[in-house]
Image (cartoon, rainbow, N blue to C red):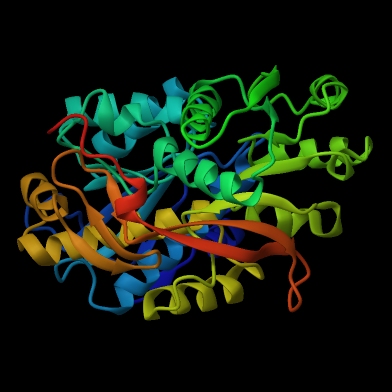
Amino acid sequence: MSWISRRDLLKTAGVSSAAVTAGCLGNGNGNGNGGDTFRYGVLMPTSGPIASAGEEAVAAAEIAVDQIANDGGVGGQDVEMELRDTEADPETAVDRARALVDTEDVDVLVGVISSAVSLAVSEYAAGADIPFLATVAQTPSLTEEECRRQTFRTTTNVRQQQTVAAEYISREMDDLETVASISPDYVYGRQSWEFFQEQLSQRMDFDVVYEGWPAFLSGEFQSDIRAALDEEPDLVHSVLYSGDMIAFFEQANEFDFFDQVEFFAGDTPMHVSQPLGDSFAESYAVSYYYYDHPNNDPNQAFVDQYRQQEDAVPTVFAGSTHVAVDAVRHAVDASGGTDVDSIIDGLEGLTFESVMGETTLRPEDHQAIFEFYRGGRMAQLEDEEFYGLTEMETFSSDEIVIDPVCQV
């Protein structure tokens, strides 16, 4: 199959990344109707403050589609990828999703970044009856409050994430007494902090001395940094990410912030530590995807191709997006069809070896369950020019995952 990359198209056609097609050369669409091309509709923010996170996810989707194309396609069909920019806005994302379905005839939707965006796209996908694989959004609501037949999640949710954080930090900081929080003021930030407190309180006594809620994508953190330091907490908890977390580190360094407190930096923030280099600082992190774990064939092939293409290592955004694109291929192989019902039937209960290890899409609520979850500490790596996990502890899914709250 002849592959045209998004970057080549941008160079040759001058097309905006908000409406670019990348895929194998094929004739016609799949849509389960006997066409000869299976089409992924990818929804990611490729403009604005978290564009870098979106671009990392898009790069992973490209690589996954490339690998699938070279391995015979989806159900024997050629594969194509249509990309649309969500601008990290729920209304825009739904409009772009609708265009992918109505105009581009995509077979599945894959994305997004931002919990609010994921909830909006999930509602749309249910009404349009098209499979939607949520790749980055962490809100538990997506697979707990209203389980939808069309929606699957190929990343963790904040309940899993913050259970690992609380367990690891309680072991490493057994003398912890005071905690502060600086997180984005929207559903992801609020729920992350809620679940962390809930889980940590089951393991130790502590006092909350400061809660800072900077506006999502504001990039302004000096007042919260000063206020938190005034309270002299033992630990500052944060789930800022992408451009916000980069700005936070740059501003915090002006106050010698990381010399005064321990810091929890969320999901292994390689998307932050790589561009920051020496401006990053030692911190605690959790890991649902880390580029050199697991040491399996899918992940090794992915990391090698990502390094070659991007001159960087893949991030959490990239890892869970690769899982989503690859899951669809495995689902079609399992069900034998590319129509909506066959794709959903194949995804429900699917277990396969992904770049994140053994992965199961739980049939009851469509939440991804991984064999292992990780907590660790980030410091300067010996063989790289950025900070990564120099200490790591693994936790089994039995320790972290709760039973389904709702059922499709």
